[in-house]
Length: 245
Ligand code: CA
Image (tube, rainbow, N blue to C red):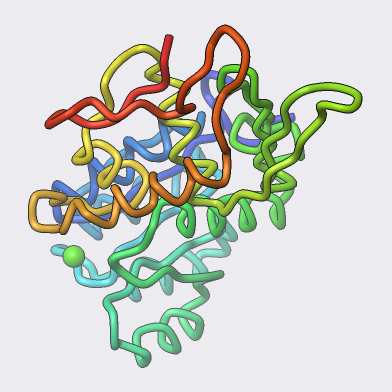
């Protein structure tokens, strides 16, 4: 099932010199079941990518040592066909074109959302055959009595006449996944912004967008019924949100 791996996880090389972004990317990849290897320089990235140990390379453009274009160009010139996802800056369309000319397979524009990044990563891994449909990121998971299916972007509850299905966005799925993982524990807005929204420095971002998103998601999910009556997502004043244990 896994193509390139050392410990049964799909290995992804992360070449990014900005530490907060690099560790943020690694956290997201690890969270989604991948093995992430961080590298902070272009020349080190090229050396590691040459090893053939990775199923995918996330490659920043501006890097010390060699820039992302040079790394990608060298890999292709050497016949290395590892999929490359470039991380480009907003408004730098010429970077996107240059990336493709250098042999990059796809790109995301910074700042990107976690949902967008993981979708691109998955698409590239499927295209290369490294990922099949049974990967952990697309597997359904439970959120209390809800069954969340990332593949069909839907949450189902109840059976028979009580059966109900709610449409979700990719970001809804990631919010529920994080809260489910931390079930019973408080998840701060900062953690949500970092892991789901992909902001490396979430202090600088309005936390209100998280509150608005959660409010919308709650409305969609409706209320829990029966003995567990209440909201699916609890607000913990001044601290964040929680999936009731
Ligand atoms: Ca950079």
